[in-house]
Length: 352
Image (cartoon, rainbow, N blue to C red; front, side, top):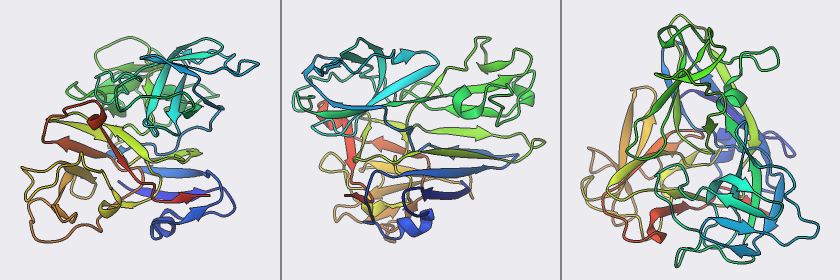
């Protein structure tokens, strides 16, 4: 992946390489920034969007069910519809057992939010009231607007021009491919210039409002005859450690969720992460190698050092996963409980 730059717009701009070189850099507030991705023609670029839109509301939970949270503010704060197709909204928990978990809002009243507890990655719902992993009264959360195909890549109008090149069919068009629930086939979209909207390959339905989930993995393919372009995204870094949902005996496509470079040694996945003497007995992370056009696979030994398959000798703990890179995570063992279905890793920066 050829990424140009990331910089904070807090007090000064910091190049992503400068920021990543100091793993525990400190910033005074939750910073906003921009990240640019170069999209060269004639190739496929894997990426994720590590910045989210700014928070529109922060609050604490006053009541919880298996898939809803409520607040008891007076006056009630949730007066806007948060579940319309063209403008998705998400909840991120900022404290408690589910801190870092991000879920789509599927409905709301003035004081209650209904959440999609499948979290997109796996298709397996985990209730908010799960034993040892439950949301509690007093847990903090924030609400932020999400993105769609049209909001990120354009709707083909003067107000929202296309970033990619469309065509009368997929053969002549640039494409976007998304990786969603584990085990489900990837879905590919292109902008149909005849119909005037985005559509999924094999369907004529308008796909402008298809959601691009926060931190999700996808790839962009530009035809060889089309011009290079750059995807520029602004937004906000995550203020809490990432929490990634996974499955046992399976693989998910994901990202670090951080807009800075992260070394393998900084990924501290906890006791649920299986280490081992070789790639067949360990959980693994694979990172897209843009130069060689494949995923490189890494596993962690019992002493916490990392190896890259098939080299069982060289310590790869300082290998860098660049900001916005796509990774896959494979669990070699079945997840025995819902609590174990999540991996967390510490923030690669600190917030005061």
